[in-house]
Each structure stands twice: as structure tokens, then as C-alpha cells.
Image 1 (tube, rainbow, N blue to C red):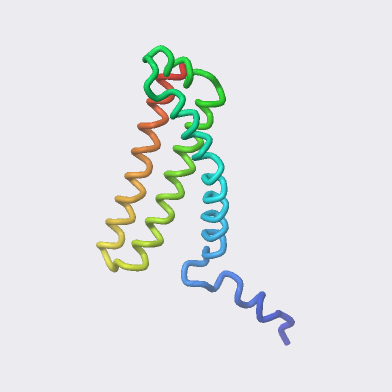
Image 2: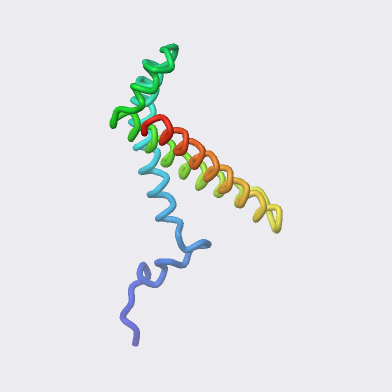
Length: 123
């Protein structure tokens, strides 16, 4: 006789086996972005319209540079996971695989380009 509860039997039996983890990641990243993006817009808005030297000096400081890197990384991961979920809901077959690869590739290219530009400014 097996002494296992219904809940224990159901854990990990969803369609992708990662639904709860995906939901928590998306919720946590959305809350983090809700705080980071307005702060980043304030920093970026302050630098907007300044001379080249002033912008470089602003983003050479640790807080604006780290905040910009975090906003880039977290927002592109959030985008990739959200786009993947949307694509999986509406596309099928090889089109689905191609679009998921495209979404992830786009997110990685934007992240890499932004972090490279940030490193060039900050260092």
C-alpha cells in the first residue's frame, strides 16, 4: 500500500513540469522591474541632453552602471520567457521552435550589445 498524498502525486505533472517556477520567476522579475525601471528612467533622464563627457561621467559611476546592467539583463530575460510563453500558446511545430529560438536570440543579442556598450562607457 502506497502512503502518498494526492498533492505529492501531482507535483511535477504539469505540461512542462516547470509552470510554478516560471510563474514565480515572472512575478519576481516583474516586481523587480517595477522598482528598477522608474529609477533607471530618472537616471537616464538626468543624463539625457547632457554633453558626451557628462553622460560618460554619469554612467561611469557604480550605481547608474550597475542599475543599467541589471535593467538590461532582467528585462531581456523577462521578455524572453514571456515571449516564449506567448509563442507556445499560439504557434505549433517547427514554427514554434523557430520563433522561440528567435525570441531568445533577440534577447541575448540586445543584452550582449547593451552590456558591451555599458562596459565601454563605464571603463
